[in-house]
Length: 172
Image 1 (cartoon, rainbow, N blue to C red):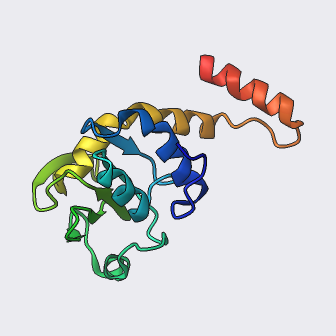
Image 2 (cartoon, rainbow, N blue to C red):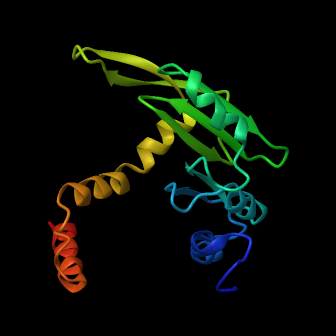
Image 3 (cartoon, helix red, strand yellow):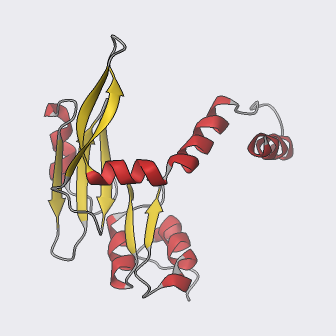
């Protein structure tokens, strides 16, 4: 396995290297938006690895039509685009637009999630199935990111102290 795949970039090459051992086994890989891209999803789909995750809309080869839709979307609305190879990009508006990319979800399938309104009442909001499954799978990773953001170590520490503080926070 090559250490670097030029068409995927640095973050995509990391994922390609880590998933090399499960090629051809039809596994599902869930990713955060930092690593995900349309090129990576297609690359892994060609190697029989299905992917799902959030994505930054400014990534190369991300459909511009979905980026433009974000201005006129209301709470609970969604839109999607698919290519012939089986990669689908979905935008769902919760408080703000959230972008997803998947190679194994049906973008037309709809579910619902509970959200609190400003008044405190809980109401069901429609969402694509990709949102519900991603939330169920990525809960631990997102919670870790949230906790380290809350207890961020001070910036004036030198990097070894910041690393030590981060490790202590992870263990707590």
